Length: 167
Image 1: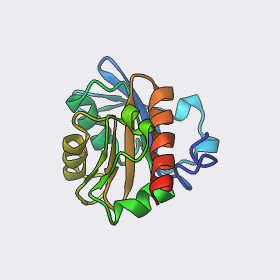
Image 2 (image 1 turned 60 degrees about the vertical axis):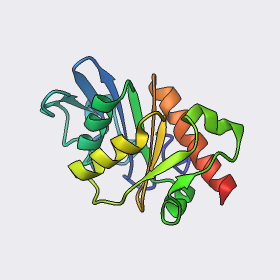
Image 3 (image 1 turned 90 degrees about the vertical axis):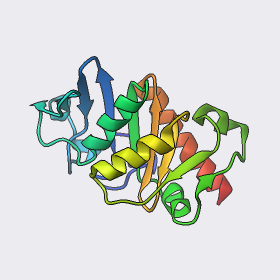
Image 4 (image 1 turned 180 degrees about the vertical axis):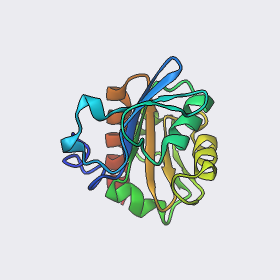
């Protein structure tokens, strides 16, 4: 419910997920965060992306699944925050401008542009995330990962703050 007030995701954009074993819980597609209830969270099997319960999962489900396969992340927060999106159009990497960057794993790479919801976006994000806890998606937004949803969310907030400082 903090996504819009924290300026991380306007409207119904962005998404969050948590992995537990072979199941991923992910926010539904097209639903405002302030209206979401526990029953609206989608459960998706990580091995084959089968929907186990809930409405239609986020269009970025393939990206979340790819990142879980490529990393040790337990939670992922995908944002469309304004300063990150603005910088994603002109940077190949957000440089280490403040020591807070250390929690993100160092300078944040910008993954190449590709259409949202595609396996190409998922592959590009996974490659750019290697060795990091955050990645910027060109002309799109960002992803932050962590061992808990709270830590992934705080990393997403830190990334937007760093982008604003750099700007």
